[in-house]
Length: 62
Ligand SMILES: [Zn+2]
Image 1 (tube, rainbow, N blue to C red):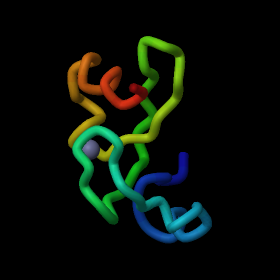
Image 2: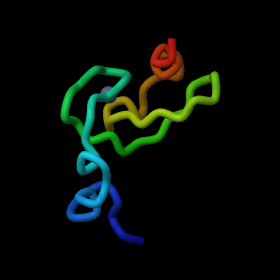
Image 3: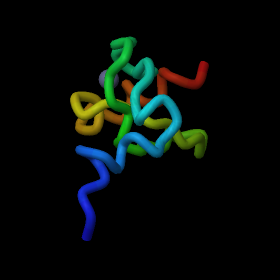
């Protein structure tokens, strides 16, 4: 399997896989980890927030 979270694979992604993490509000961080809120909304979070408690993710979608 190709590495999808590092290297050239990121260059093909929008903003090269980076953006503002909706959970920790870090800017220009890599958003490569999909989480789903309790409302069923899919959000991409950073590595730090990939292991965040569910209530942190739920707080994203007001
Ligand atoms: Zn984050």
